[in-house]
Length: 114
Image (cartoon, rainbow, N blue to C red):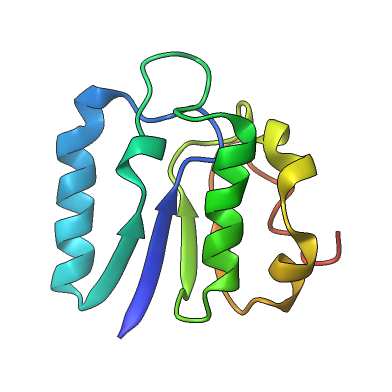
């Protein structure tokens, strides 16, 4: 069974997107994909992240260190993701087989040779 982690390295999702997230999780689970996420770190109504930059990075680091995680999907774009750069564990990222996906101006983390 494949496993995916849903994260928000940047701005949190709006609370009115909760139903869409639940639909996404249900879709993935119907495809026999196990879904991991920290709900408290995904939602925020402000332009800052749902949790501070260090915590957002810790969550992503945790998923990169978990050999069961095949994919990490950042649902938040890249508006303030750069705040997490100094907290990311680049050794864990480099040695992980997990694939990180994002959109918008999210572009720094997909490079393995940082």
